[in-house]
Length: 356
Ligand SMILES: O=C(O)CCC(=O)C(=O)O
Ligand SMILES: [Fe+2]
Image 1 (spheres, helix red, strand yellow):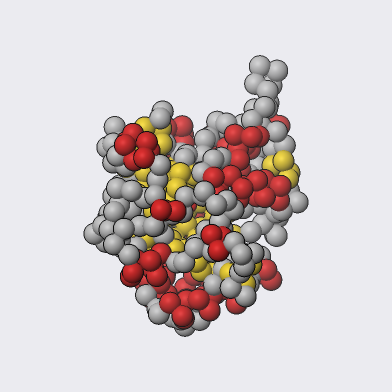
Image 2 (cartoon, rainbow, N blue to C red; image 1 turned 90 degrees about the vertical axis):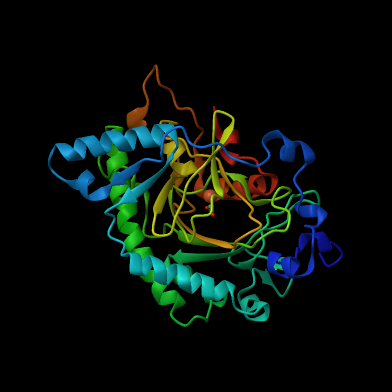
């Protein structure tokens, strides 16, 4: 591996301090730069906001909110939630702790490096994506990936020791975010006329909760690179917190990229690939990407709800009929995840290979 230095990109933080132009391995192919100029279109309708308190009410409001959720799921696959029970102060704390970490000197962050002994890549930790091919185009961002649950699988060496309260705050955020996941998954099961707990019952007590905190540094040439390449999320659902109103997140629909307006304290929910399979394609996991900015840094925190590695992901039997056959093959979560990372590096989607 030592004679393949292309496998080990430096962090964008190191690059940003030293280069005027992004190095070639970060540059998008010319046709992709020209085809849409990276500028997304304005959404024809706003990202729907689902009021979770209303969704849980026992009056007509709940039905209206559920109808809104259905339309959100069938249009963008991405939506905002309100009245979700996470205080803005906790959102600030978790984003501030993340920012404090990213602003530490590089040597300090590298104590949590995702390169074991400086060479062997592991998903968890601080750094860049895994480089699987010499022609892989790299993203203009650094990341911190952590497995939060199951508790006994936390790789503590990858967790920041500074700021000191980082872990406490992240765990508090996780426990609140999990409640949102439960409310949303029950409502989604109800929309499909499945047992209310159908989706929740897929999670064993070994189901992983992982977090990815993305650090997008300003780029001198945002017209040539991406902050995060197009992808759909693994897992059942993801919650997303963003620290700024910079217009950077985009979602793909009918071949067009649309800007998803974000702002601090807004909580976005994204449908993941596992849900697309379990709902037999009724709820699609949206392809999204993040464009770079010359002006400002940006931090986002995505929390992913995965399934036990031994779990078989498959379309819910209750959704299948003669005239509505399964559209996806059954696959073990761990096999799916192995494929996911292969595809992710190339900017393609593993879920495409599961379609029947
Ligand atoms: O930074 C963002 O807005 C999105 C991040 C994201 O898509 C991810 O971490 O999977
Ligand atoms: Fe994502």
